[in-house]
Length: 233
Length: 209
Image (tube, rainbow over all chains, first blue to last red; front, side, top):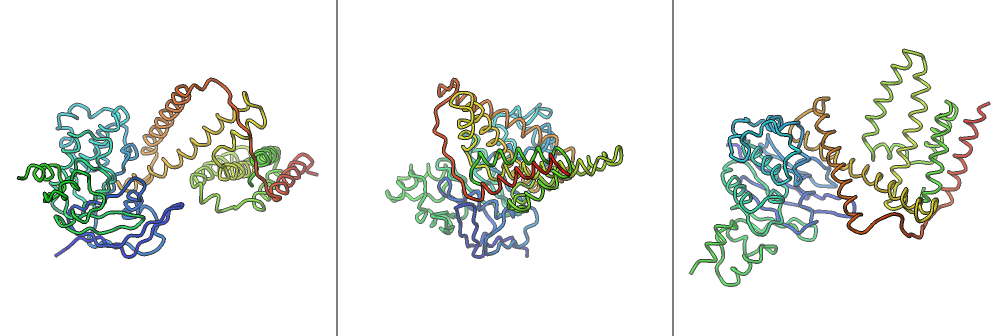
């Protein structure tokens, strides 16, 4: 049986005056990697995608064929002149992508005519329509409104295979995840599987922390789970 | 080289010498080998390799047409490498200091600010280019002429958007013209030696025999 696995073996990444140490094993499922702004989330994502060199240590990928990194800024993904060309560059069937009400009739539009939020929605729908053994999402919630964030969370919960890593400092609307990791003072810390990880999560959203102190610990970190915990009697 | 005044004057002398004739170009290349970090510069600013290939192709065509390709390649190579050194040693803010030192608080400040904004655009462009390469790599798309078109459109689009933002920011902050600044410069003994050597290069170019 093929079990996909990403292993960071005493990895050290150095960029300018910043260094990050990471050690851990990422199995199939959705992983949340949280951390403050500037903590090194994007750097770690780039290293995991093999786009920047490591200072020391190694990254091994077991049975990972297709992998993808989604950048925080969607403009960096543009390689086509029209949305139709963009769609094809992701290997997606245009019929699937342009059947959504927001994009219907927009095949010939230039990607530059979209706002950053619209462009991000478009890319994320292209990415989530494909299968990747390793999917790295760098700040997928930035530039999105609340409704789009919820749509993205639903899309992420539909991923049943492969490793999905979400690098974010989002505090309000999050998807259901299997494991939480945290970058603190340049070190990647494993907070473990859900639901136990919630209590060990230092950078948890303030609402979740408040619920923990009241003894109403959510089963997971999604918006619905937090609402359920808050309404629990 | 720390002192931007010596660096700019040195670059001007060397480029002029390289432009004059092949003796000047050879002397400028020798200067570049002696006073710069050489290959480290090329590694830091990778697009220069593309420019070198382009100059090489033009030189081959010129050589085939009127046998001036070799001279063109030598002179352009020297000018490109000197420009590369000038850009690689750039420290944010130094062109503004240079502008005020040279032309005063009004016209000097204006030119210094323009040069500063242009240099920072180059730095941002290189950063954007790096990200675009990464995106192509992730999608498994090779760099072809057809793919370069949208990439170039993107870079121009972003640069224009940034220029508009900068202009609005200056207007919002009440910028009208000029400004006050006390220029500060630092130099090492080696700056003066390298500057003097650049003057010698120009003498060689003007009086080759």
